Amino acid sequence: MRNALACVNDLLERKNRKPITLSDYYNYVETPIIGFYRHILPPEELDFNEISKAYHEDYARHLNETRLADGIYELLHTLKDKGVYKYIVTANQIDEVTDLLKKFGIYDCFDRVLGADNTLAESKIERAKSLFDSLRIEPNEAIFIGDTLHDLETANALGIDCVLVEYGHQGKKLLSEHNAFSVASVKDLERIIFDERVVDFHTHSTCSDGTMTPAELVLHAEKRGLSAFALTDHDSVDGIKEAMAQAEKCNIEFIPGIEFSAAENTETHIIGLFIDPENEILLRTIQKLKDSRRRRMEDICRKLQNLGLDITHDEALKIAGGNFVGRAHIAKLMVEKGYCETIRECFDKYIGLGKPAYSEKNELTAVEAVKSIRAAGGLAFLAHLNQTGYDIEKTEELLLTLKEAGLNGIEGYYPEYNENHISSYRALAEKLSLALSGGSDFHGSMKPHIEIGVGKGDLRIPYFIYENLKNIHKND
Image (cartoon, rainbow, N blue to C red; front, side, top):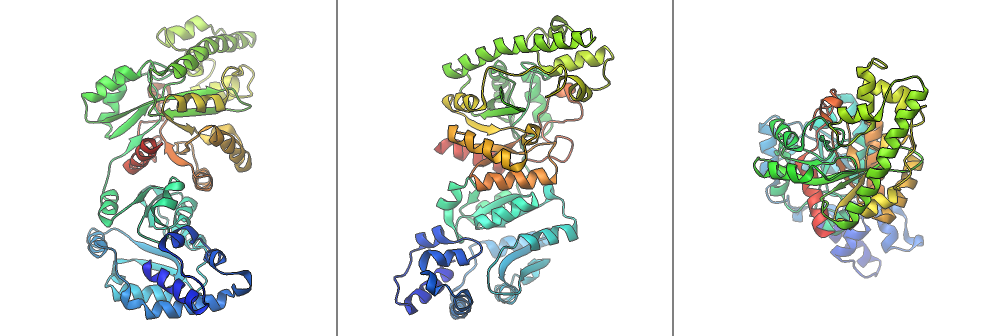
């Protein structure tokens, strides 16, 4: 990277212009690279063919000054010995990249090198997509390692996890401003590559509409091999104390959380993580919602009765264990009485958004939910974006409004997401500098097709996502 800075300053010197600093370089670099030169040259001097030719001539002169990052040679050979497939997708010219790889003795460590056929340093997203499609790579089995926000953009387009190094072309400051996960050394990178730990930031207990007690949920999470998880009961923190006490006895990290159901034009839920469950503002918000929820559930039952279904709130309360009643409890009662075959069918035909027995939320807006979580010292995330039913433009409008209120991120991992959801939502998060969270939305036997940590079987949230959220929370 310092060689790249030297080449840029060689160009500026020939044009009798002041050199730029490393900090300037970090702030200006972008893709396509012509954007970088717009920061340092006037429009009349932006002949990119000339600039590109000069840059590569200068780079060749500085080639002997180029060094590998400490430890990367050993790491690449270790990965090769372990049979890990490795591919390079670069915006640089293929011949130039190949020469460098051979110079450092690492060319044979890579299974394929995809470079450009020109020197324009354009986007590499399409080349990366073609590689994935041709090799049929499973997103959960891949990780993208880069050093620029364009690398993050490319990883998002592929729907795979991304780690950026801070000693490359854009540096820690710019990467952290976009809430990207970055590491300072090859040693940190190696740790992440070989880290098999997984986490889950979206689960429910009997204190809302799950079927396991908070303590049982902790034990189940540990049994399933999770290293960390959050309890995010609907509009409730009643289970946090019990879960926290059990987690202290187990080999698992616990994150206190909540899921607020907001009153919007569509299904809008806000997840709070790292909250203080005793915060007065949070508790006042929860009490307001508890009163509202009972009225809403009673209204749903009345509407079902008007449709000819013998469903009462008292019966749903018994199924819920005498505590919290949610739509899932009502749905379970409907299944038991034979009105539907599955809980999903109940939602699709009767109690889901826009269905005949649906009852509108009218107590808490999404903005108020975000502000309540932030007041309780937590990080706020828009949950399961697909359930809003919004297209990407409308979703962006919602996120911009919520970000202004303090939203920290979105659920980038969720069992119901398809490939298009994953790539679109992650790209939106990068565009708006929002962090990624996510989880299984585990409810126990209430959702028998969903397992904690893995969702429908193909969900995997690596531990470094948790590390990133802890860093954001620490510096918030």
